[in-house]
Length: 355
Image 1 (cartoon, rainbow, N blue to C red):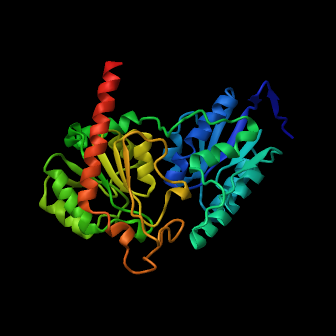
Image 2 (cartoon, one colour):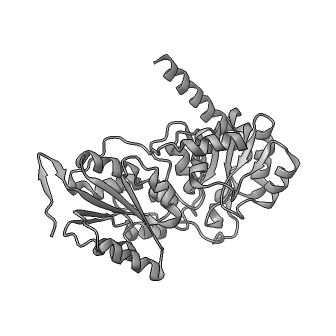
Image 3 (tube, rainbow, N blue to C red):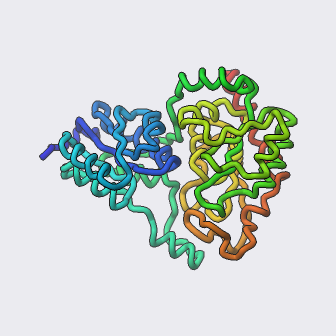
């Protein structure tokens, strides 16, 4: 069995597996914990294990030395487990807390495993009664606390990603309007109740396009029909849904004048690259841990409604049928928030220039 030693508060290990299988935003949120682990174990090889769709973003996490991407399920997953079992591991950190992530860390055959446990019971009590038991921390701090037995500490890190240079050069060639700091819109979400109405996105795009190019990003099928019609009417509104790799998306967000997004993975990418951000939250709330983490130029818009939150991650339809948590946030609200975050970003840039 591997031997793990601690000298003067510094972890001495050679190969550490960090497991987070999904999803896009959750993997970005592991960044502060990964950097804290690097400080605790400066000479180790940090290996990030995830599923194939998220390999690219894991490769851009600072301090990650190697990425192993596995099939999510089926024979491919169990083949990956056998391959992992044949490798040497000193430590394993399970930041997923699921049955599959447990199977992966068990395959590492190390006696030193730390596992993240989501606060499911306390969250359920809060959802049902609005009674908050204890303090709900942001998810990155929960990951850090999971690794604290190895001497990993919170040293104030925010989210961060390495910049993919080659995609940035390609994007500038394909989309010359990128030189003008476009507005980036992220209308999609896995859950319908976390989506701002399509007609609102269309109005926002039309108003923003009067001042700068607008790019709509997301997965295939995430372009609302009303917004698609607006893009067909305006040369300055560009539909990039389904056209960008994750490195392309990160490069695009890093050049944004501002980003408007719901509670979804690209929102956390925008935070990690320091883009000015307006985040629209509906059925989910800060206690669940996914608010923009230690962001500088950010405005979170949400409604103070008795029915919020209704679900921990969003759902297919509003339980009450009105969807006011998103509909009550108006285009005018978003425009005012955009003015504030862009003004703050300009002030920060001027301060940085003086330094």
